[in-house]
Image 1: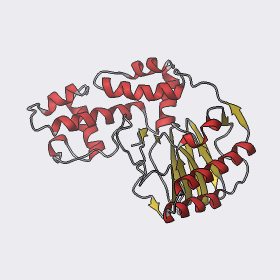
Image 2: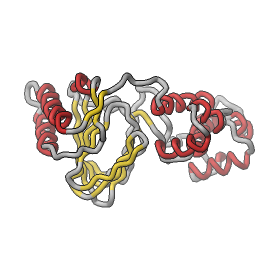
Image 3: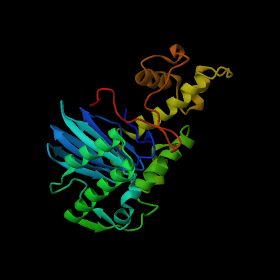
Length: 289
């Protein structure tokens, strides 16, 4: 199951740049406050970014801006490098312009820049934080000079992505009774278009997502030692129309019936709504090199 979650990256110190190299990277739809630059060293990957998919081969790169919902799927044995950095480092660029295409159309010294940043982060010499910021700023200036740009308009509160994030909060609060029609109306979209939009941006259907939210709340109720609610009562409180439907969804997602739930069970793909929480979107078959 793939949920669009907020990722909060934890740094070792005051550095504002992070780099990594992955084999077979696969992650869940997520978003973060940092900007992200991804370079394919070997193989091929698919990146979904804000409702648009890009295919990248060896030598290709893509830039993902702050708060953009995205996920990555790699072909077997593919290797990519990435850096996440504080968007404030290039705020003057990002506040005025955006790349016309997320996938870069021209070559840049990205591997060399990543290697320099990694050395700085490893050796941690005096002023290494400033050097990392200078390196990424210099690279991004070259990219923004070399790529086609569009002027950035003021972010509209009612934009599809903004409304989508607000909808996730709405589902979190009204999961027991909100309907597909309610959600489509909240987004201001027709039901057929909303269905396609939701699946494309989240990687799952609206029904699957809503069931996962309901189930997370049901699990919390089942594990509450102070509660004397029956399974049937919990099913009703969480918005399932029948106990049979609840049991089926519960087993599909957890692999067990509600009555067999361990006291310490944790639903791994839980939606995370606040930036106080930390979420690692990387799936287990991904290897950090």
